[in-house]
Image 1 (spheres, rainbow, N blue to C red):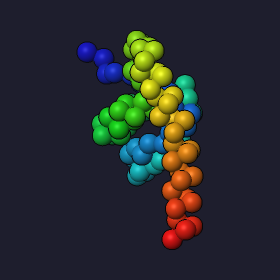
Image 2 (image 1 turned 180 degrees about the horizontal axis):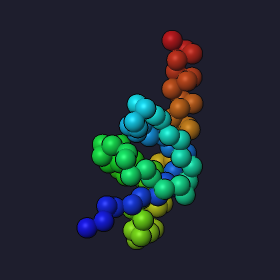
Image 3 (image 1 turned 135 degrees about the horizontal axis):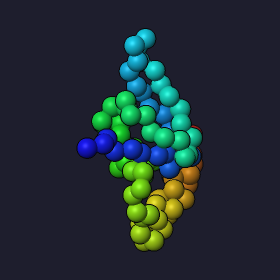
Length: 89
């Protein structure tokens, strides 16, 4: 059975891989193939956070896509809130 192949769906992601010369960190833009030598835990993390998807996988349901967009829209507001709280302390 062939190994699963993944593609990057996030705008930009990084992953640490092992090479003959030692560890390296690879930066990948949306649409790039996910490295086959990426550690399983990194693959799992990126899948769970919708940063990569299996090649040939069905598109996410509209409700799931809307929920992800809502989550992304809240992130900058939460970051700004945390920064302001830090200034008040």
